[in-house]
Image 1 (cartoon, rainbow, N blue to C red):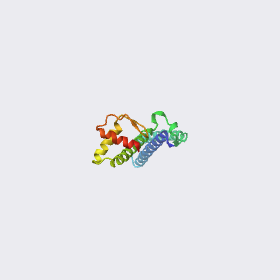
Image 2 (cartoon, rainbow, N blue to C red):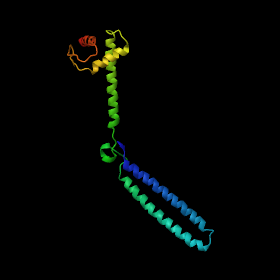
Image 3 (cartoon, rainbow, N blue to C red):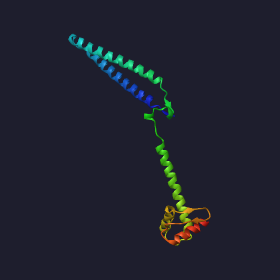
Image 4 (cartoon, rainbow, N blue to C red):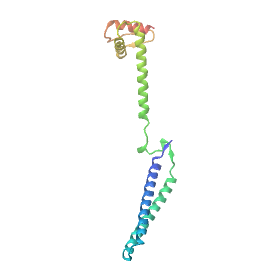
Length: 169
């Protein structure tokens, strides 16, 4: 369940209309207060402005009531399947990133385990062992559980012997 985008937009409009009503009411209050000490000539002009502001306030209050009614008909939370296609959230991006990271971690652990197994047979540097493991991983060969058929494209022939030894384990 996620928050309904339409409900949120109606709430935003609802708040903006309330702000406009408050702003117009504040203007109306200042006009009423200014009307008391002024002369009769300005009173008629001031009353016209007050009437215009009252009409705006009434129209905004009607708009406010219609927004309340519209928002009552919308649920606050909906399922992702109920969302319109244009605004639907896409969670697959983060999930696929997690999956890619998990696969990378598994591959790195398998590579490390294979390199540690080869370390007993290989007396060279750890970087050289890891390079040999990578060449085994990227080479074309048919691996079976007990034997290895047709090792190809290894950089050195003794890599083939070591890989055959590993496959026997």
